[in-house]
Structures are given as structure tokens and as C-alpha cells.
Length: 297
Image 1 (spheres, rainbow, N blue to C red):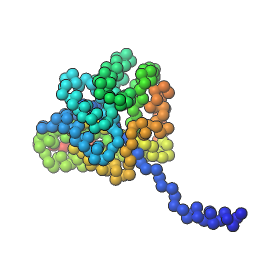
Image 2 (spheres, rainbow, N blue to C red):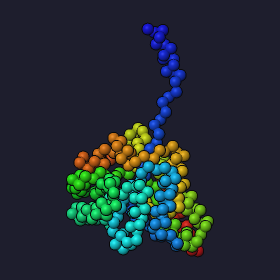
Image 3 (cartoon, rainbow, N blue to C red):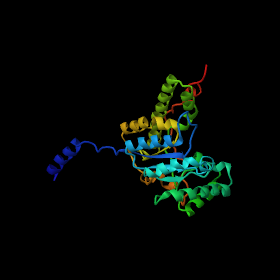
Image 4 (cartoon, one colour):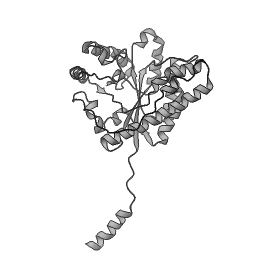
């Protein structure tokens, strides 16, 4: 027996180690149809079309757009953004009617915000699954009883919770980007773009370190980003960076099928307790740049 076993052991020792599973990322986009100030000459529809063009070019299979329907009262023309999103084949989800955090409202008022978003979602769904909910500000409530009550409401209405495990803070760049284009300041804009990509890189490093510390592996990541003018400008570079890092783009349901998300996605279950991660890499802080770039002397 040994004479057969030894050659097999030798072959196993010489065999290459199994390849690590590919990195996975589901991209989600908040605050449709309006996020951030518009620079001169741009429209909300222009922003959406540029983002969608970048997503299609990168072959991203699905991007949930989380909707705040109140914008259609003051800017009815922005419904065109939502229709463009659906024409691209991407689904919409619920982000609350007017983007109110749970900490700022009573449970009854918060649940009314969720319900008030639904008529527009139903009208635009055309068979897609719109019963994914993204908490505005990712605020699930500091009060345990209040949080549990909202989760019961979501469960009774068939929702899943769209959790987040990566964000590069694109919203922080909104004001500075508008300043740079209004000035105009080409050198300032280059500095801003460099800072933006540093935020993207830093977010990947941070999320991967947190995942490995908590789970011993790379879980499928869920990226939170926004339908902002600067994202429209930078998304081709952002998506190219993710591809260069080895990420494969997947759907939200595929990513959050991972056991790491189970209790946080399913509102019928108690939410997961915080996961200990230990020391993590320091994230890039863009504030010094944002507070100084493209300001008039």
C-alpha cells in the first residue's frame, strides 16, 4: 500500500495550491434621481446616462438604484432618469420617500416614508423585484425596540435589506467638484480627481482588511455609491480600477446570499451583533483637499 501512497503524496505536494476564489462586488447606487449640486451645463439625465454608459461598458450585470420619490414633486422632469435606469435593465429599490433617517422620525412616520415610495416603484418595476430596502444614511436606529419594529414592518411587507460593506464616500466630493467646474479650475480638478481615486483605493483596502479580520476571507462586497455628477465623470476609471484588482461584478442577491449577510438581509431574523475586527488600515481622509481645492484666492 505504501508504495502506491508515496507517489500520490509526491504528486499532491507538487500540485499548485488551489486558486483563491475571485473577488466579487455588487454595485448599488443611492439617491436616484437626484444627488448633489449640478455643475453648469449638466442635467440630471446627462449624469444618469454617463453612469449607465460606464456600467454597460464594464458589463456590470445589475445595479440597484435606490429611489427617493419626493424629488418628482419639485423636479418632475427627473422621472426621465428613472425611466432611463429601467430601460438599461437595472432595477429600482426603496430608499424612503424623502431620505429620512430612522433616528429622526417616529416608527409610524418612518414606515409611512417607506410606503410612500412604493407607488412609483410599482409603476416603474415592470416585473423587476423592487422589494429591497436601503436605510437612508444607513441609519437602522440606535434604539433596539424601534429597530426591531421597523424590521417587523419590512418583513411583513416582503422586503430584504440591502446591506453595505464598501463605500468610498463619493458624496463628500460633491461641493468641491461643482466649485472646480464653476471656477473653472483645471489644476484643481486634477487634484480632486487624484483624491477621488485615492478614496476608491483606500475603501477597497479597508473593506478587504475588515472582511478578512471578521470572517477570515473576502466576502462578496456590496458597494454603496451615489448618482452624482462627479461619479458620472469618474466611474469609467473607478470600474477599471475594480477590474484591475480582480473584482467580478455580481448581482445584489448573489452577493448577499453569502452567510455573512444572512441576519442583516433577512428582517425576520434578529440583526447580527457587531463583528470584532481588531486594528484596520487607516482610511484616506479627503477633507484637507476638499476644504482647499478650487477656492477663490
